[in-house]
Image (cartoon, rainbow, N blue to C red):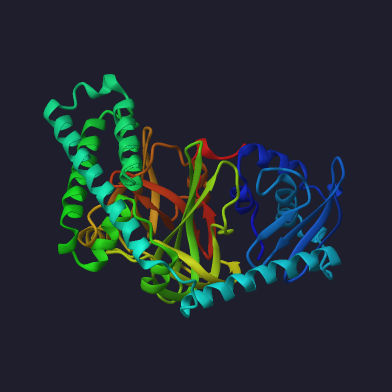
Length: 446
C-alpha cells in the first residue's frame, strides 16, 4: 500500500514529531533504504545508526532508537520518503535484520491466534465459580448504592436550579464522579465528570447540561429495572454504567462479520492523560458501519495501526448491545488502498432516519458516524455547513475548512464524519476513489 503524505502525518503522535519527520524525509538522510511486498526498511544516522522496519501487511513498525514517541521521527521520515519520493526506495530482498523481525512478529501473531482459538474452543483454566459470583454480587451492591446516591444528587441539583452552577465550576461534578468511581460505576463517573466542563463553554450550555442530566436519569431508571429489559438492551445499560464486556462474553455473544473494511474516518481525542482513537469503518460487501475504539496512555502507541483511507481485509467482532456498533478486529489479512466508493446515505434526511432507528433501539447514543453522498461545503460569515442534493444542510463544528473546500473545487463529494446531535464533524472526503482526511484549517499541522 502506498501511503499519502497526509496519511503518514496522521500517524504522528504530535506536531513536533511531524516536523522532525519532515526533516528526515530527504533521501540523503538514509542508507540502504528498500522495500518489497512485505516490508519497508532503512538505516538512519543520528547519534548512532538506527534500524527502521515497517511491516506493510498492517503497518506495524520498529526502530532501534530510544524515543518514547510512537511512531518515532525515524519511522515517520522513512514513510514520508516513500510517500513523496518512491523512486528513492528501491525494491529488493529484505536484509537479515528485517527478516528476523518479521519472523518474530509472525510468531507472536501465531501464538495470539492459538490462544484465541483455545479460548473459543473452551480450553480454559478452571475458575472458582462461587468466588466469581461473590465478587459480582459485591460489585452489584456497590453499583446500586452509587446509583441511589447519584439519583439523590440529581434531584437536589434540579430542585436548586442551574443558575448557580456556573459559579461552582467543574468541582461539583468532579466530587460526584469520584463517588461513582468508589462505587465501581466508572462509566457513569466519566459521564458526570465530562458534564462539569460544559459549564460556560457555549451560550446554550444550560440546555445541553439539562438534556444530559435527563439522559443520566433515564439510565438510572433502566438500571433499576434491568431484569425487565431484553438481553441486548441489558448489555448496553450495564456497559454505560461501567461494566466491561469480558473477552469471554465478547467471544460468546459477539457477532462476527468478515469483509473488506473501508476506514472512512478517524480522529483522536486527547485529554492529557488518555488518548482515544475513534475509527469509523464500512464493510464493502455488508455495508455494515462499525466504530473501532482504541485507548493509549500518554504518547504510547495504539495497539493496532488503523490508517484513515485504507481498506483492511479481516473479521470484525461486534460488542453485544441493543445497537451493535462498536467492534474490534478479530483477525486481519491485508491492508490496501481504498479504491471503491463506500456505502453512504443519499440525503441528510435519510441519515437522520437511520439515527432515529438507532436511538429507538438504544436511547443513550450520542455520536453517529456515517458517509453522506454528494454534498458541498457552504459558509455564511463564520458558520460552516454542508449541503446535500436536496438542499438540506447540516452545521459543522466551529472551524474553517478552506483547504477541504479548495480540494473539492466546489463540486459534490462524499463526506464521512460524526454527528453529535448538534454539529457534524467532517473526517474524510471521498471522491473518484481517493480519500482525503479532513482537518479543519486551525488543526492542520504546520
